[in-house]
Length: 155
Image 1: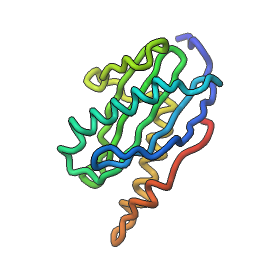
Image 2: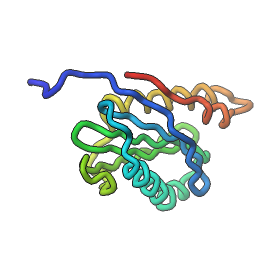
Image 3: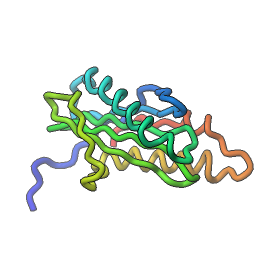
Image 4: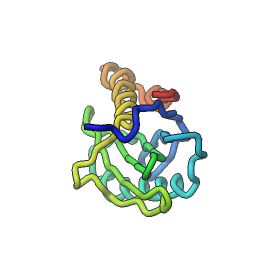
């Protein structure tokens, strides 16, 4: 096997908290290179998250929190919309669009596509934050502390 490119670190950066219906979603970007984050991609990610939350999240026993990853990759864009439900379950939905058409996000979860190496780092951070602030606090799970625990680093 020959790699098309050796692994290079990418920045994961917290952007904002998005309030969508009953959920508050920590929103992050991951960027392949030093290009600025595409505003059209962010707008499309927000609308996609809003649609996914209204179609799926509200029908689950959710905790009102989750996260969105907006990954502006080398050859395409990836957006994932996640929320916590049933105490310890992560609902994860993936969308992809071409680099030159960021608003054309296509739902890919049914194909089995889950995450790339950089996305997994962010998902791991969010898992650890959920355990630390909610699941490990039997008498007083702390949703606000979970929302404050964000990831900002190069990985």
